[in-house]
Image (tube, rainbow, N blue to C red; front, side, top):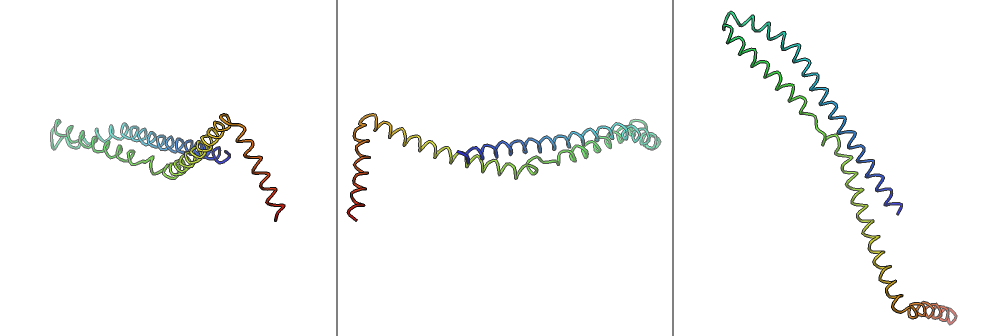
Length: 152
Protein backbone atom coordinates (compact mmCIF):
# COMPACT_ATOMS: atom_id res chain seq x y z
CA UNK A 1 0.00 0.00 0.00
CA UNK A 2 2.89 2.36 0.74
CA UNK A 3 4.20 1.72 -2.75
CA UNK A 4 0.81 2.57 -4.21
CA UNK A 5 0.69 5.85 -2.31
CA UNK A 6 4.25 6.65 -3.41
CA UNK A 7 3.29 6.04 -7.04
CA UNK A 8 0.21 8.24 -6.73
CA UNK A 9 2.38 10.97 -5.23
CA UNK A 10 4.85 10.61 -8.14
CA UNK A 11 2.03 10.85 -10.67
CA UNK A 12 0.67 14.00 -9.04
CA UNK A 13 4.12 15.59 -8.86
CA UNK A 14 4.79 14.69 -12.49
CA UNK A 15 1.48 16.18 -13.58
CA UNK A 16 2.27 19.36 -11.65
CA UNK A 17 5.70 19.57 -13.28
CA UNK A 18 4.22 19.00 -16.73
CA UNK A 19 1.63 21.73 -16.15
CA UNK A 20 4.32 24.12 -14.89
CA UNK A 21 6.48 23.53 -17.96
CA UNK A 22 3.51 23.90 -20.30
CA UNK A 23 2.61 27.17 -18.61
CA UNK A 24 6.23 28.38 -18.82
CA UNK A 25 6.37 27.63 -22.55
CA UNK A 26 3.02 29.34 -23.06
CA UNK A 27 4.32 32.34 -21.14
CA UNK A 28 7.43 32.52 -23.33
CA UNK A 29 5.37 32.19 -26.50
CA UNK A 30 3.00 34.91 -25.35
CA UNK A 31 5.90 37.18 -24.47
CA UNK A 32 7.51 36.61 -27.86
CA UNK A 33 4.25 37.32 -29.63
CA UNK A 34 3.68 40.48 -27.58
CA UNK A 35 7.23 41.60 -28.30
CA UNK A 36 6.71 40.84 -31.95
CA UNK A 37 3.53 42.88 -31.92
CA UNK A 38 5.19 45.83 -30.21
CA UNK A 39 8.18 45.73 -32.52
CA UNK A 40 5.93 45.40 -35.49
CA UNK A 41 3.80 48.33 -34.42
CA UNK A 42 6.68 50.75 -33.93
CA UNK A 43 9.14 49.46 -36.48
CA UNK A 44 6.67 48.88 -39.23
CA UNK A 45 5.25 52.36 -38.97
CA UNK A 46 8.71 53.87 -39.23
CA UNK A 47 9.81 51.55 -42.02
CA UNK A 48 6.57 52.04 -43.86
CA UNK A 49 6.91 55.79 -43.87
CA UNK A 50 10.60 55.74 -44.80
CA UNK A 51 10.19 53.01 -47.40
CA UNK A 52 7.18 54.63 -48.92
CA UNK A 53 8.98 57.95 -49.36
CA UNK A 54 12.07 56.22 -50.76
CA UNK A 55 10.14 54.08 -53.23
CA UNK A 56 7.55 56.66 -54.21
CA UNK A 57 9.89 58.42 -56.60
CA UNK A 58 10.90 55.19 -58.38
CA UNK A 59 7.64 53.18 -58.32
CA UNK A 60 4.95 55.74 -57.77
CA UNK A 61 2.55 55.86 -54.83
CA UNK A 62 0.80 52.51 -55.47
CA UNK A 63 3.95 50.50 -56.16
CA UNK A 64 5.69 51.91 -53.11
CA UNK A 65 2.74 51.01 -50.87
CA UNK A 66 2.67 47.45 -52.28
CA UNK A 67 6.37 46.84 -51.62
CA UNK A 68 6.07 48.23 -48.09
CA UNK A 69 3.09 45.95 -47.35
CA UNK A 70 4.91 42.84 -48.63
CA UNK A 71 7.88 43.59 -46.40
CA UNK A 72 5.48 43.98 -43.45
CA UNK A 73 3.95 40.56 -44.08
CA UNK A 74 7.39 38.95 -44.36
CA UNK A 75 8.46 40.42 -41.03
CA UNK A 76 5.26 39.21 -39.35
CA UNK A 77 5.78 35.67 -40.72
CA UNK A 78 9.34 35.54 -39.37
CA UNK A 79 8.20 36.58 -35.88
CA UNK A 80 5.33 34.08 -35.80
CA UNK A 81 7.73 31.29 -36.88
CA UNK A 82 10.10 32.21 -34.03
CA UNK A 83 7.25 31.96 -31.50
CA UNK A 84 6.10 28.64 -32.96
CA UNK A 85 9.51 27.01 -32.41
CA UNK A 86 8.84 26.64 -28.69
CA UNK A 87 8.00 23.00 -27.88
CA UNK A 88 6.12 21.74 -24.84
CA UNK A 89 6.90 18.10 -25.66
CA UNK A 90 10.65 18.65 -25.54
CA UNK A 91 10.35 20.43 -22.19
CA UNK A 92 8.12 17.81 -20.54
CA UNK A 93 9.45 14.54 -22.00
CA UNK A 94 11.23 13.37 -18.82
CA UNK A 95 8.28 14.22 -16.56
CA UNK A 96 5.88 12.39 -18.88
CA UNK A 97 8.08 9.28 -18.80
CA UNK A 98 8.23 9.32 -14.98
CA UNK A 99 4.46 9.79 -14.80
CA UNK A 100 3.83 6.92 -17.21
CA UNK A 101 6.13 4.59 -15.23
CA UNK A 102 4.34 5.49 -11.99
CA UNK A 103 0.93 4.88 -13.57
CA UNK A 104 2.10 1.48 -14.85
CA UNK A 105 3.37 0.62 -11.36
CA UNK A 106 0.03 1.69 -9.85
CA UNK A 107 -1.79 -0.57 -12.33
CA UNK A 108 0.43 -3.53 -11.39
CA UNK A 109 -0.08 -2.85 -7.68
CA UNK A 110 -3.86 -2.58 -8.10
CA UNK A 111 -3.94 -5.81 -10.10
CA UNK A 112 -2.17 -7.51 -7.18
CA UNK A 113 -4.69 -6.05 -4.73
CA UNK A 114 -7.56 -7.26 -6.92
CA UNK A 115 -6.08 -10.78 -7.02
CA UNK A 116 -5.67 -10.80 -3.24
CA UNK A 117 -9.26 -9.58 -2.81
CA UNK A 118 -10.53 -12.33 -5.13
CA UNK A 119 -8.59 -14.94 -3.16
CA UNK A 120 -9.95 -13.60 0.12
CA UNK A 121 -13.49 -13.58 -1.28
CA UNK A 122 -13.19 -17.20 -2.40
CA UNK A 123 -11.81 -18.23 1.01
CA UNK A 124 -14.69 -16.45 2.76
CA UNK A 125 -17.18 -18.22 0.48
CA UNK A 126 -15.60 -21.57 1.33
CA UNK A 127 -15.73 -20.74 5.04
CA UNK A 128 -19.37 -19.61 4.76
CA UNK A 129 -20.36 -22.87 3.05
CA UNK A 130 -18.49 -25.22 5.41
CA UNK A 131 -16.95 -23.52 8.45
CA UNK A 132 -16.29 -26.81 10.22
CA UNK A 133 -14.07 -28.14 7.47
CA UNK A 134 -12.04 -24.96 7.37
CA UNK A 135 -11.60 -24.81 11.14
CA UNK A 136 -10.97 -28.53 11.54
CA UNK A 137 -8.59 -28.51 8.58
CA UNK A 138 -6.42 -25.98 10.35
CA UNK A 139 -6.57 -27.90 13.63
CA UNK A 140 -5.74 -31.20 11.93
CA UNK A 141 -2.77 -29.60 10.16
CA UNK A 142 -1.48 -28.19 13.46
CA UNK A 143 -1.85 -31.56 15.22
CA UNK A 144 -0.10 -33.37 12.37
CA UNK A 145 2.73 -30.82 12.47
CA UNK A 146 3.13 -31.36 16.22
CA UNK A 147 3.07 -35.14 15.85
CA UNK A 148 5.66 -35.15 13.11
CA UNK A 149 7.97 -32.93 15.20
CA UNK A 150 7.71 -35.22 18.24
CA UNK A 151 8.48 -38.32 16.21
CA UNK A 152 11.65 -36.72 14.76
